Image (cartoon, rainbow, N blue to C red; front, side):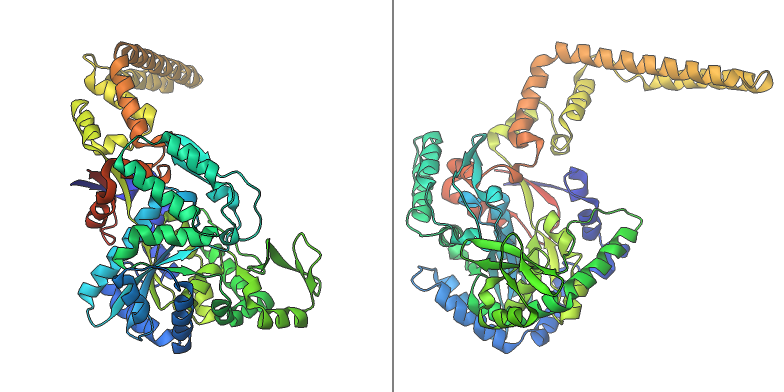
Length: 533
């Protein structure tokens, strides 16, 4: 496979915060533990080994044995599940929402980054075991964010009423989604495989969590992926002491607020991804997942009549810890308490809020993981590569905004010069003499000279745009072919990985798709990859 790489910053699709983090900018050093470099994992292993209680490992092992009961797994996953009981075993984790049929393509890239990093770590630190983990966001309640996937430029929606944690949702109504999907598929062996995968996931499992576990296991089980559902009473019992600090002492709110203030003081003017709440937990019961808020001396469940005194809430937390669900601020801490984890792999938006959390981790006495941006990639087919060659388009060209791309290429292929920079510079030189004359005679004349200069420069801009527009019409066929190709590779003028579902690539490459991606995506080579398949 042909592989081109370009820096994240050069793509124009990633925030300054993430690009500066990748570059190791000095002002960001207080907000992370160690940069994602292979040599830094030695210290991370040592820190986590002393920070992770053995009793937490026992809970992890026992709960996973329960969660995997009756599930067919590969020998590699079975080995990893057993090794998690050993003190020399550590994890690398990624997480994601329970998007329908995996959702965007980067679902695959997250997991591939995670698996490949564990392989790399084993080669470098052979004395230890490294297990790739996918943490399912089963407690999330944003159904509107996960109830569809894109296929053939269409949104295939799961239409139903939903409330509470999405992991509990039964799969009613997915027959209609399947039929819409099947009607879009061609007649081929790969299409039949996709249909079978959809049916096995959603028609043979009772809820969305089980269906998503099946999908992830079917796609990545042979690589040893371990899938964790955090919505379990055993895990929540381990979380309970930390939840108390959050709810009754506002530890996370205080520490994250301090960090947010420090980020806002930086000269770079980074955007703040999330803001903490005084209490960063939801109350989770049945189809209910609502925020816990303090009203006077009473703890209330938002939008309900449920309320607790402090003693009653402490008792509830002690007896029913599974009813306390962490929000976006508390969930990362939960994950790092449960897992012997070294590194979290996520997208730019995720890592932006993780960078707000280090001080709150320290206050809670939990080791802060290494943060690694997931692999990002653009997959270009052989047919598309040939089109690029014929139109003399480069990889970098593709990342331009469409109007910028068109203007750049029209100037390149036009047989006349559409750049009026020479004329504008010449005009400015002429006006310098006029300014000198104004200084020597009547200074009030200076304003008239300036107005005339601006008017004439605007006139040249207008002529340049008019000529460019004329050339676009003349070269209409070339413009059309160029924009059609860019639209194929950048659906909705956004990254392919944020729009396409893996099924569109699977139709073309079949079972070879994941091995190809596994082979070519290198997690610690932190660049944007363009893969010519």
